Length: 102
Image 1 (tube, one colour):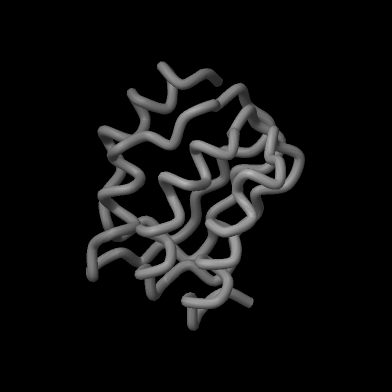
Image 2: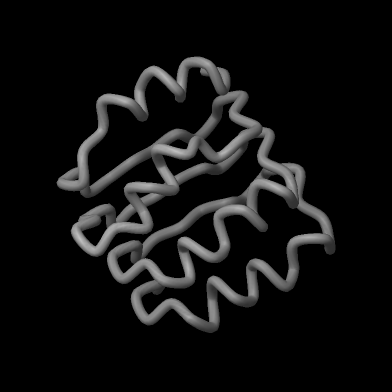
């Protein structure tokens, strides 16, 4: 699935979703709808798998602020993406500020 496919799916997802596995796709951007869901207090998403996509440092930097405030995500997999040292600070923010990640 590409960014365009994610766009179609994300428009249908609601806050009561508990698991989202988008691994092994060709996603390069974090869709604004996902950021909106993660940023709401009503978010119930506890499992987010974005492994083996085409996410870059910019994607993680964009996601970091929202995820650092999120109180529901317990599992987050960003492995096997195109991440470099350029997103270390963003990853540290997510890890240090999240009280839920395991």
